[in-house]
Amino acid sequence: MIGIFFEILNFCIFCAVIVYLFRRSFLPQLREKIMSEFHAFSNLHSDHRKLIASQRNLETSIAYQEDYAKVLFKKINHWRNVVDLDKEAQKNIQVNLYKEADDKVVKQAKIFALNQAYKDVAPLVVEQLKQDLEKHYQDTDEAHAYVNKLIKALK
Image 1 (cartoon, rainbow, N blue to C red):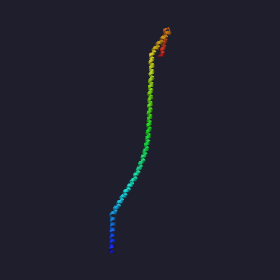
Image 2 (cartoon, rainbow, N blue to C red):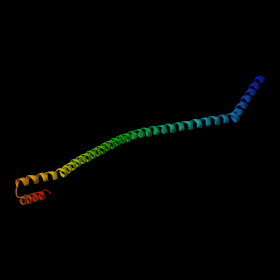
Image 3 (tube, rainbow, N blue to C red):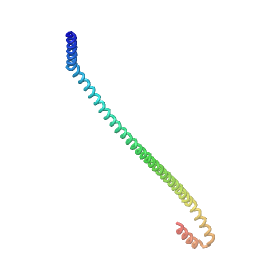
Image 4 (tube, rainbow, N blue to C red):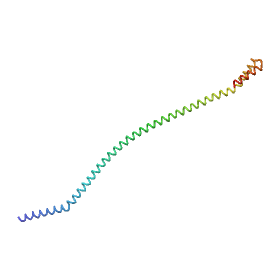
């Protein structure tokens, strides 16, 4: 019985030494490792929440920028249309000015042609009129006076 008692006592002492060694050596290292893993997990969780918030902010920003880009594209298209209309109006004005200039040149050419014809024909008409009047009036002095009066009136 004493043998069993000492065997149990030795076993208890052995267990106490193992528990003591475990608490002295392995438990602080195990606690430290568990705490470092917990802090690492905690940091990762915190970083994950920050990243999720950052992602939401980015998604909101992207949506806002897309809406803003749509508005800008609408404005760009509107201004393109305005510029195209202005170009078309300027082109029409230019075409009208060219047409007016061409019409004016044609009118001036007609007037010049009439003036040229008048210069060419007027002396002949005056001469013919002179001859007709001289035939009509036998008195040459009276005919000359009448012809000179007519010529002054024509000039």
